Amino acid sequence: MKLIHSRSPDVIVIGAGLAGLVVASGLQRSGVCVQVFDKSGDLGGRLATRRRSEGRWDHGAPCVEASSEAFRKLLESLREAGSATLTGEPAGALTRYSGAPDMRALLQPLRERLAMKFDHEIQGLTATTQGWEVRGQVRGKAFVDQAPALVCTAPGPQSARLLVAENEAAGAPGACVLRELRSRLSAVRYSPCWTALLRFEQPVALSSPYADAVIDRVRPWSMHEQGRTRHWLVQANSQWSQTHLEASAADVAEQLLEAWRQHDGSADGQAAGLQSLRAHRWRYARCSEPLDGECWWDPALRLGLAGDWFVEPDAQGAFASAQTLVETMTGSWLGADAVAIAQ
Image (cartoon, rainbow, N blue to C red; front, side, top):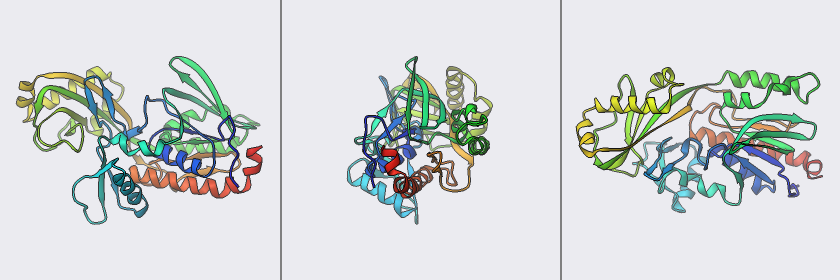
C-alpha cells in the first residue's frame, strides 16, 4: 500500500548528494511524499560542480567507477540520456564515467520532481512521538520542519552531531538505540582534502599528475579537458590536509599555489597569468574507517542512514547503500505502517 500524499512530507531526507537523491527518488517512486534538505546551494555533494562568475570546476570526484551491474545500469541510462560519458576504456570489470558537461549532470536526472530546499543548514534532529523534528538555519533565519520519518545521508560523524544529545535523555523516544547509534557513528573516520581552484588568463598545459609532500595531484577542471585549459585544480594529500584542516581557505590557497609553482609546469602557468585563486575544504573527502553493513534502518524510530561510509567508500558504495535502504524501507515501513503513517 502506498502512502497518501499530504501537504507535509512523509519523509525528510538530509543531503542532496548521490545517496540522498537515490533514496529520495526511490521512495518517491513508491508513492512517498519526500522533502530533501541540503546546506549547499545546489545538489551534488562530493560530485558537485563549483560555479562562479570566473568559471566552473568539478572540484570533488572527477569521475565515478562502476563494477556492479546495478550501478553500471544507472550510469548507462544516464549516458543514453546525455548526462554521462565514458572516461577511458573499461578496465576489466571496472568502468569509469564522468558527467556531461560536468559532474553535477550525473545527479540532475535524479532530482526530477523532487521537493528540494537548498541553503538549509541542519543543526539538530530530534525524535518525537510523532516522528522527527528538523531544526536549522536558512540564510540566517531559523526554521523548523517535521515528518513521520527521517533519512540522513550526511557523513557518519556529521550525522552523529545532528542527532542531538536530547535524544538520549531518559524517557525520550528510542533513547537507548540512539545513544548506541551516535557512539557508532562517531567512530567513523574520514580523510580530508584541501583543493585549490585556479583560473589563468591564458590556457595552461601541465605535465602528468604527480605527488609530493603537499600535493596529491594536479588536474584540469573536468575529465573532458585535454591538453591546455584555463581552469585547474590542485589537490593536497590527506596528511597535509589533516595538518592544515582548520587553516583559512585563503592561506591554504596560497600554500597550494606555492607548492604548485615548484612543479615543472610552473613556468607555463606563470607566463599565462593567474586570474583567480580559491580553496575548498572537503572535511569528509574519503571514508577510511566505515561501518559494517550497507545501511541502517530502525522501523520503530523510522530513522534511516545511508552513504559511502557503509563498507564501500566511493560513489558505487553510496549508491548501493541508498538502494538497499530504499528496499528495506519499502519492504518493512510501507508494508506494515502505511495506513498508520497516511493517517
